[in-house]
Amino acid sequence: MELRRVEVPSQAPRPVRTGGRAARRHAARRARRGSLGVLLCRFTGELFITAGLVMLLFVAYQLWWTNVRALQQAGGAAHHLQSRWDEEEQGADRDAGSFSPGEGFAIIYIPALDVKAPIAEGVGKQKILDRGMVGHYGDGALKTAMPWDKNGNFSLAGHRNTHGEPFRYVNRLKPGDKIVVETRSAFYTYEMTSRLEQTSPANVGVIAPVPAGSGFRGPGRYITLTTCTPEFTSTYRLIVWGKMVDERPRSKGKPDALVN
Image 1 (cartoon, rainbow, N blue to C red):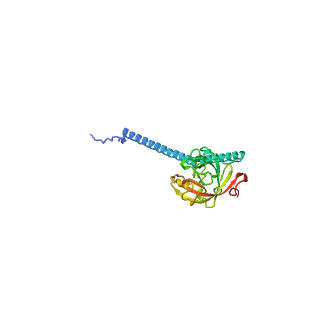
Image 2: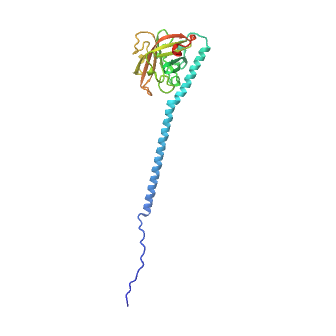
């Protein structure tokens, strides 16, 4: 009997499973972690963008809108003062004690800086300085003279940055530059004489009747402007001094410093 070689049909190899359910679960976890990472990155990015926009809006409010609003308020107060004076009969100016805190009683002009701002009694931030007004040191131990006093130092405070910033550029004033104060009855013209670039807020000697550091040697009719320095901080005070050189009744019209 003859032997035969029988050919057995070959079978295709079965695919080898490399992971099964465990691999699928691992892949799903990786996908979920990837999705969470993407979501977290998106959330963080949007949070930073929102914070940046809020900061930009705050800066715009501080540097732009507070000035717009304060200048509107200050301009209205100055106009109201002048209208009231024009309607009233000419007479003597009132005592400093006759003015309520925050009440406007004069207008300051600094022609070299194109400044015109109402002056109010007191140096309160919210009621006076933040409204674009210049404040008169007129209370308690910080009480100073009025322009019409025969001797003394008419001392004022104003913002250097934001809220109308009437004293923004007082550091640019030069000796001889004029500072004019208009009241109900008169124009008082001062001439800038000296400046103190930086001093402590506690140095109240700068607004004394004969201000310390000003170079004045005896009683006179002086003006002092105080504001914060460096810019956008309130660490120190910048001081500008001047002396009166002219007194002119309002009935005779504006002084030369406001006409030329």
